[in-house]
Length: 275
Length: 275
Image (cartoon, rainbow over all chains, first blue to last red; front, side, top):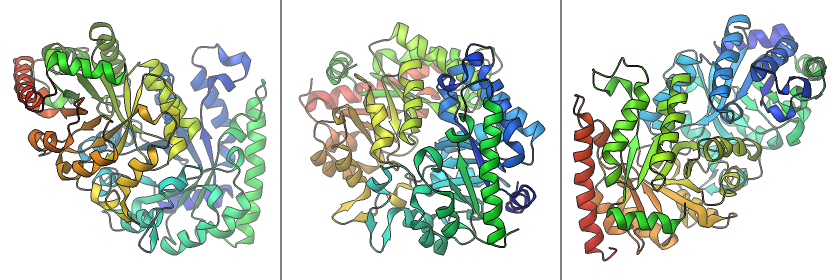
């Protein structure tokens, strides 16, 4: 998938919503908690209910890994389902991987070749040769952690180094990496103020924005400072959508929650003359 | 497992060797490459051949993930085998994980509860609340990336921030985290010079040292500056041991390669009055 395809989707759906699949069986409706294949079935219902209102699905890999082989098989099944029935929707492996080059190659193989994700989130601490193996894949995106939504972001990401904070240095340095046009960046919704500065550094790149809803960030604040003329934002919501209800009506409630965010996004896109 | 148990093993085996299981089917002997359960069988042979010369096994999770469900099942089987037959050996999930707290909890569950690893490698970029969910597990170790062996380490880890480089800041900051006595740190063998300084910051903590062998670091250099009076080092070798031969004699050659390193380590431990 290319940036252009993604922007087309945004225009068609009048949405820049990413639905986060953090599959937690304890939060599933009691009726399905003991069913076989429950992780896939829950995910499928959420996908079918929300696909018309979102342009991306973000699969939080930790939640699948926590269920061992069952989780891994479900992850394969969910990705098969998405790639077969919703090929136009951008898929994100939220995996926060990266290691020495030889090892990062393996992670790239796992997520790009095997699962056929469109993108993966990657941590920058180990530098260029830990990220470039992901960037060698054509039409795949590497979403680099820049400034995250959590409290601990302040520990290192906001440290000053010369005239820059670490997250600024990460962004600037990464732009010199091979195929850096295939980078996107994670910026937490709780950091809307920093987006003004971030947009100066990377006016064109897409940003993945987690942290609205349960983590307390605001869609309006993020849009005000983060939008560019091709939208340039994927705003994620996980728990507020997929666990909008823990009853039999969970898919319908997820649909309504996604629709409500999409309607806000449509207004924002119109106000900003993007659609 | 505790630091004391680990030091006991080091004294018993006169070794501080960690054998790295980077399972790459393309490098397996041709005879076993097409066999069912090859990843487990190869790992088992290497484990049985080298266990008497090493105190730790480091499983490189990327290499298992790259084989999808088969890799995941093999990982479960290898860990079952290690926990059943070699419970005294320290196991490391080389996974380089970390995410917001809610998600890190899931990774901790996957590697500590489900697989029952003794430790996991973790990336520091997202700060305290991304690492503390791992540290809450009693008698488990969280091995934080400090200064890695790869070229890209220079991109961010060696950046100056005030009087510190980033990796120093990571070490110092992490010492204030909850249960920081359960931290270990990754320092690449190619960074032996920096160990003098690192040992001033963390005289007592264990260090995991990858990068001897294929990556070019030297055991002697690392020992000179990194040892403390409880050894305090786990020096990893992967490819030089497990792919010492790609013929039917691969396990024997792995045994010999491990034995040779162990003999060097024994000498080093004696010279430094640790055993």
